[in-house]
Image 1: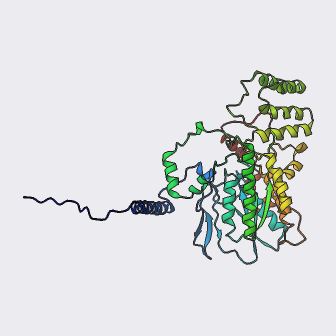
Image 2: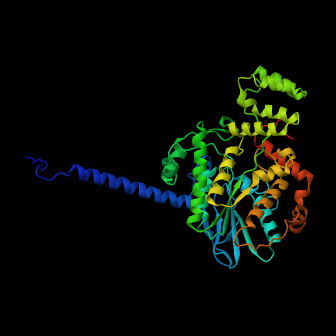
Length: 451
């Protein structure tokens, strides 16, 4: 007869607390192992866990890399939106290291882009380095591009927080374009640093096709929250540099007031009042067009055309007011004028050096309104525009402590082009081709009155 063993009813059972603890421990071990495996695969570039959208919206992850160089370790930026020109991890004695941080404007696109292998001239960092070396020939400079394309101020802040560890003397920061995205909470930003979370997002979330995307940076409907987000990021940049004893130079952003690519969802062709007003405007009947625009139910959309009427009548101050209102209400990648106003107030109150690029652009523009002579598209400049902005930054730098009281004059663009053999900048076909490529990237064309 078979004897069946019965469970020992006297064996002590695990308490609920222990069962929960062991379950949590096993889960933690699983996540730890998965994280380590994924980190190894990503560092070896076998996989990537970042969605293209996340590369714009969230702080960069582990982008500063070291590599061997002939004279010691070299640093390069391993981020698909940044230029990767290696530079020494250890700054040479007597060298003034200047980082340029910001968006594609600060990079000097399209003359320098994340795909560039060597600098070829025409970009903002290149002009600045050439000007500084010419004005202060006895000093040694490194001007390093740490800008990233398609970024907003949150990503710029995260980059600056990393740059302060790389022996900078000065960080020049130009940010304000591409603003519009505001995280609902900081939780997503923090979770984005965890590789397993990034992989789950990439796997589970729908990635919209190009045709499903808006032409411009989506705008948070809460303008006050958007402004506060930008302002907090600027304060964070100032705090990071102060904590590490690094000199910060902030820049206002030049604004292309007139350029306005039309969103397919705009009322341009659906509002009969606007259609008739634009017809009158094209025939130079500006007062009549103004009366009609003011009757439109889409007044925000009409602001830019109202400005065009005032400009057509030679009333440039009124035109500027309405152009600025139009950009403030509906930016097309441009910086909102209120952001520049905040930067002026912040730098004044906190004694931060300011390169006022918006004012500098107004000085060189006809009637203070920039044209295609200065801008290629809503936020990128011609090489002549970048040269002028680099000169303004140079004037701000020349007032700082490391530099002697004397400074040479800003060299002419022609002299620098000859000195560095940047001959492509003098080729009309190159300049026109550059403009066309930028406009083609927007899948649209500029209004006829942007010239």
